Structures are given as structure tokens and as C-alpha cells.
Length: 283
Image (tube, rainbow, N blue to C red; front, side, top):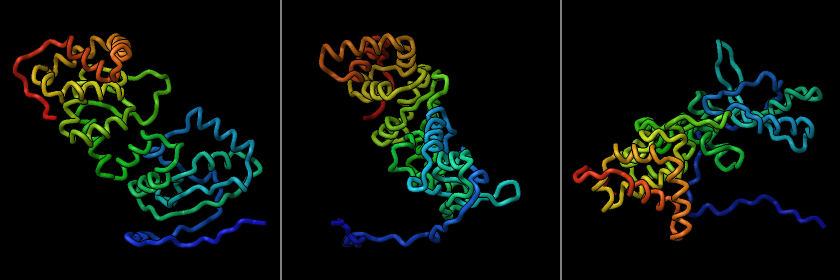
């Protein structure tokens, strides 16, 4: 006996249903080789992505096919379709000699900002898209919180990468710890977060990690430690101790059963040249 349930509406009591701001999507069949990808808000295909594409080609099946989401755009005087979501599927289809036209769903997104916003909306709940990619797309789409975070990083001299470096080599000031930075900005407001991030940027860490951010915040917002701290001396100590302090912090944290970031912050503070009167960051 089949267990079938009809689609039924849920109660909207207490909700304010939103009226769609654009027209409903349309479906078209197109040659996947005619589609474009905008790398202002989408990452380029790396080795992991290429493996995924090869798997799709080898196991291509229409029952598993999810139509790419596209939007019309102008490029070099002609109208094209940009893929907002599903570039791996489109590339696999274009590569498969047994596939000609594919169905795509076309939504209204007139400019790059609207397209980036659509990309964020399509991928917010998906695991395959990184926080870094969503952050940069949200910035391009003009999301206020993400714009504040990016401006804070820019002003502090911290560079939020779009992807993991292919060589595995970071440059001073690089970071992929976007979740930690967002949390820092939320707790300390952009100005307070900027002061903390600037200290880490001046330490020439490569990369700046979530551990570094929490350790610096701990020291710079502590009512006792912060009043004796010279930010420039603090940056110098952090840079000088870099990896050795982190190794020591692991041992201290394990011995004292405390958090590693607190142990690291304490080590940094203990070995920093103090100054009696400095402006302290208000917690």
C-alpha cells in the first residue's frame, strides 16, 4: 500500500507572507555550452569541483538532474544567460557527448548585485558552498552585515580570501576565519573589531586564524590586561612568537584544563612589553 500525502498548506498565523518582488521563473531548454559563470560572486572550479564534474559525467541520469538556475544579462553587446547556481551540472552536461540541450530555470536578476543576492539565497542552506564564498557574494549583493564585516577587515588590513590558496601558502594578513570575524564584529561593533584585527594584521600572521582572533580579543578587552597594553608592542610579540606560542598554549591548555585561546592570549600578554598609560579598548 502506497503512503501518499497531498501537499497541504501550513498555518500562516503570526506570519506576514511576502509578495514576490519579481515574476515567476521560466523554464527553457538551452545548449549548456552557451551559458556563462560570473566569478565576481562564484568561485572558480578547483580540483574537488573537477572530480565532482567527472562523477556527474560518468553517472549522468536525468532522474538526478537538477536544472541550473540562470538569469539574463548583457555582455559585450549581446544577451547571455549567467548560471547563478549549478555551474558543475552545466559543465558536466556541456562535456557529455550524449547530452544536447538541458532545461534551465531562468529568474529575474537584472544586475550583478541582484544575481549575487540570488546566488546567496540559493546556497545559504547548502553544504557545498563555503562561508567565504557566501560572504563575498553577500558583500557584492549589498547585505549590510556582510558589508560592515568587509569594511572592518579592509580598514584593519586583513584580507578575507575567496578560496583556500591553491599552493597552501598564505600571505601576511590573509584569513579564512570569516565566521570568527563576523562574531567579533557582532560582539564588539565594527570599530572595536577593527582595533583587534589591526593588531593581528600588524603581527604579519599568515594566516590570521579564529584562535588568534579570540586570543587577541580576550587580552584587549580584559579590564586588567588592556590598560597595561601597548598595541604596537602587542603586535610585535604576537609576530615574534607566532608558532612557538601556539605550541606552548596547547600544553598550557591541556595542563590547566582551560581553553587554548585563553592560554594563547595569556602567553602573548605575559611576554609583551607593558606600558603604564595607554588607551584601552572598552569591553
